[in-house]
Amino acid sequence: MLAVIGTALLVLSGALCGRQLGSVYLKRLEMHKKLLMLYEHSAILFEYSMLTLEELVQRLSCIGDLSQLDFLYIPDNLVDTRSYIISVIKSKNRTGSDESERNLLDFFTAFGTSDINGQCAYARLAAERERRELIRVEESYKKRYCVLCKLGALAGAFAAVMMI
Image 1: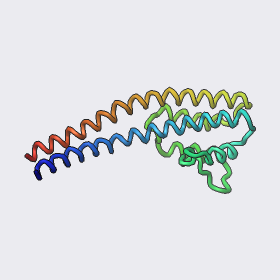
Image 2 (image 1 turned 135 degrees about the vertical axis):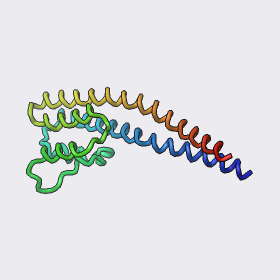
Image 3 (image 1 turned 180 degrees about the horizontal axis):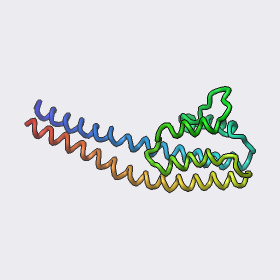
Image 4 (image 1 turned 45 degrees about the horizontal axis):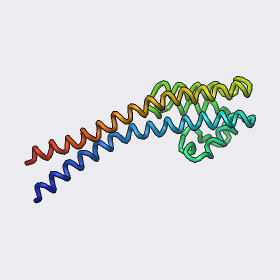
């Protein structure tokens, strides 16, 4: 009886380890969704109000899920907001995707370089790029998460067989 319980616990622990490894992909997927939301909200804000970069960042940082994005926290008395945001974005890769990071950098670099229609168009373009990247990441997540969970359970089963 004790051997059966031990075997079940080993299989369960292996499956949970696989699930934990898969959570990295889940975090990346959630980050892509947040970036898509950022671009879509930015397009709406551009369309209906003329905002400076500081005002845009302040409004975006008050929106539910977007408040978790670290590059939207701007210290007080900052002279060059754009440079600060770009340096924070460059400091680490949040999505695991070079294309998504480049899209984010381009978005903040191009802010304020055209009229309102150009800003709206660029925000929509960034959203479309991120949407394509999100679809790619979702497919990858589904494949890898499932494989990692099954691989973890198999590793647990293998360990249990070796113990018997």
